[in-house]
Amino acid sequence: MLRIGPPLATDVVAARDVPVSAPDGVSLLTDVYLAMPRRPLPVILLRSPYGRGGANGIAGRLFAERGYHAVVQSTRGTSGSGGKVDFDKEATDGRAAADWIVEQDWCDGSMGTFGGSYLTFTQYALASTRPPQLRAMAVAVWGAERRAPYFYGGSFALGRALAWPGAVANQEGGRAGSLRGRLRGRSDLWPALQHLPIREADTVAYGHPVPFYRDWVDHDQPGDPYWTPTDFRAVLREAGVPVTMTAGWYDLFLPSMLADYQELRASGQQARLRIGAWHHSSPGLFRYALQDALDWFGTYLRGRPAGLAAPTAPTSPAAPVRVQVMGGGGWRDLDDWPPPPAVARWHLQPGGGLAAALPPAGEPDWYAYDPADPTPSVGGTSISGGGPKDNRALEQRADVLTYTSEPLAAALEITGPVAAELYVGSSLPHADFFARLCDVDPRGRSVNVTDGIVRLTAATPEPQLARVELWPTAHRFPAGHRIRFQVSSGAHPRYARNLGSGEPLATGTTLVAARQAVFHDPARPSGVLLPLPPPTI
Image 1 (tube, helix red, strand yellow):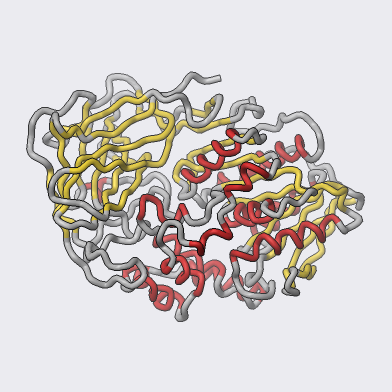
Image 2 (image 1 turned 180 degrees about the vertical axis):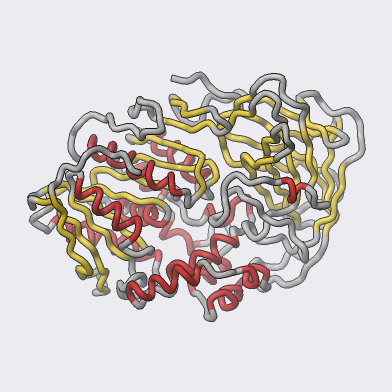
């Protein structure tokens, strides 16, 4: 049940399938929710590829019930809107919608934007056109740079990239087409995720090529100009629009969002940040983001002091950063992100130990990685099945190394960026190293807290230092629990497996097994850097 305050409007009138023209004449279908009695009010715009019903329709009506008019528009090529999916046109399409809104007699000349995931992408695209009517933004689980989350650490986010077309690529037939697209997206993609070359996996999944999916895998190199039109990081420095951000510890886009928040603050913009124990599609994420947006819009569109806190959060909504400390730590308010640096280094030990002490002399640990039987993904930032999961079955695999501490005498809390510094070797130049931090309870259940990956392109059998940036986190390891650190060479299909052959991402088909090493001795002290919590405010 949403607790977002009592309705202010006595009635809401909805107009369905209103056509709004894009600059090139494409018709974008739009639903309008008008608060009654009809009068000029601020307007909240949602632009989505996921249909105008469901959560989007609920949000539109809830905004209208609470003192705004709301406009929910289907982006081009989806849910009956004309044209084909085109990321580069979201800026001009969004601006056309914003200008249409302010021409209506029910708009008071101001508007805000709302929505998570792709709906945040459309917000940034609109903001890049500098519309004067845009006065506030409420974004969630998406970053201002579109490329980065698909190639984190140099590895391709195959699971998300291949599943996303199932939600949008078959929606040209209106609501019925939208439903078919979503149902197709839920089908078993496993044969496609296993298929090589990756470029043709779309045909295996959907029966036809998906042009934008092929664009992603064809343009995989950093700096490729394909991505430039949808890199909206400059908007963060220049837009001058107050932004509230909702993120999740297990969300694919978290590192990008944190970089965006830091950019906003560094350039003097008005911004705040909330991070909960959510993955990308957690139901609680939508509820929290909606409550947070109503508070934000109340301040910047209706001119009242901030004061509507989410019911599960502390009663200090003005705090610039609020984070949920997983493991039972509750919500904490912080002065800023990242917290002041204070790091405890825990070292990998011979025999699978993990401790603060430097490791003694010892031989490295070896394992075989075979891309024909890639190490599977379990939980984490996966779009489907993400979040905290039991890792015990994964940890039984021969291609997963584990290093575990003694039971903690007292609770240990961490908050901030997490990184691993690993001295590794490989029999192949091309190798991935995946690192994961887990919380092991007294019964032996090992639950993932955070992880990350790095792709090496010049590995050698001799040890070299590889730094793996794990997702930032906030977590409390209770007394009696143990800290576990995993090392492996992938998390398929969340990340595309490293074939070992060095062939291009799009066209590679040759599988080469590798022998991987992790060193841990006084000269090569592999370890994980755990951020100690800052003082709370």
